[in-house]
View 1 (spheres, rainbow, N blue to C red):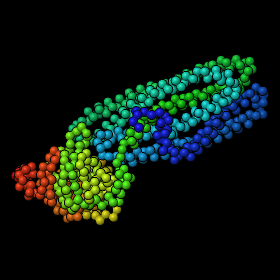
View 2 (view 1 turned 135 degrees about the horizontal axis):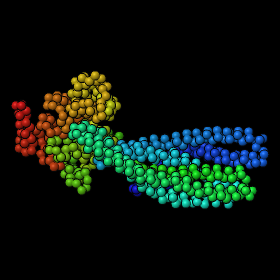
View 3 (view 1 turned 30 degrees about the vertical axis):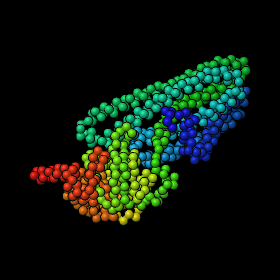
View 4 (view 1 turned 90 degrees about the vertical axis):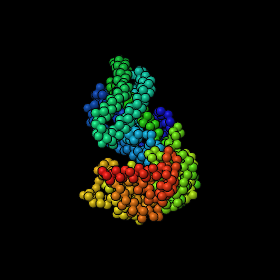
Length: 594
């Protein structure tokens, strides 16, 4: 749904799949609602009978009956209201859970490109605040609207039964209400959208600052960031005040119109009681029913505001749910089964592959063609921005080529579901990603069942076993956010151990030794060579020491392959690779002299 807002009917139709499974509970809740509201409407009628009996002198004999009736009706109404809230509000909480789970599950399978442009704070705002606003429609909104409809219906029926003309006179000012509701509703919806957008900006700002608090402190930017957050908060307050300005008009307008109705009623009703047209008890009951009518009218105003806010929120939620996903689309077409895609362990072939992140941007990869044989180790070398990381991202189907094709085992990669590809292709990203859990949980994250690789083996190959022994709780040590209590090298080695535990036939390592010293790198490479014997390995590196151990080296520059061969062949070519070797040798000599 691409419109900026939706009507109440469209909102109910959109959320129907989420509340329909609970229709029986909702129906039971509305039965309790009707009973509770109806019983409440009976109370003024008992007062009418009591007053009329007082005038006729019959109250002495019946006062006990009236008192007992009031107590019984009140108790029964309270019990029904409890049942009403238990069913309707309880169902709305289950609805909230289902909708939030549905949105979160959809977020999990969105393509990586979606998260390249949408701030995580905005997503979090939709997943929390917006869903809460939608939940209010199915819970308090439905309950209050149901109460209002039953109360209005019952009260009007009784009022018309007492005196039709008096009822029409007392209700004369109320037709103005729909006009007020319509105009106010449009304003509330517009300002609700602005409030929710501003809340998303605040959430994004807070999330980015908390995540990057160490950088903020390192650059002494605390005052600047505080002022930025304060400006967003002030704007949020202003937008809320604009919203409240219109929401706040509902109650005074309803009270004003109700007061006019009451004044008309008192004027005419007083004369009619004097002339014995109606009884005093009927007058009192009439006034009570008119007062009771004020609350449903107030509730309708409140409900209108909530529906407008929920409509704006649901549009933002639908924007996520309508984002297209690729997982399962090809599999459902029957082109390749998920089971047959699990054994991607053969040759990898890039055939004139091109890729650009956006249509208006230049190619990151341009006409790239090469073949990696099964079990071969290939190193990717090149300057920053040459396209090395992008090339690995294409192999995991984080993105698909914009030109050419990639084949594994002779199968076109875009014809294989992403889930199946990632079951056979393990990647260690350039930036280590760790979670606020124990080291053991981080290592086992994504580990497949019956994997022949044990945690002890993985940490030994990644050369992090000695570091673990220095932690008091070893594998049970809890990490801070993004592994803040680990060094850069420890993060990288822990991430390497995690991908080794997946035991995939194809391994992609993106600059795995950037934060590791030469001696540790040598130790890891010597163990990794033996571990990787049956596997295909593509490794991105800026170090010659890593590249020269590969069976073959591919040199990228500006998205194109400029050199390819073994270490000795490329050194003899006197090209980019040889220049890089000489530069690193010179740097090593300078380090030795220092």
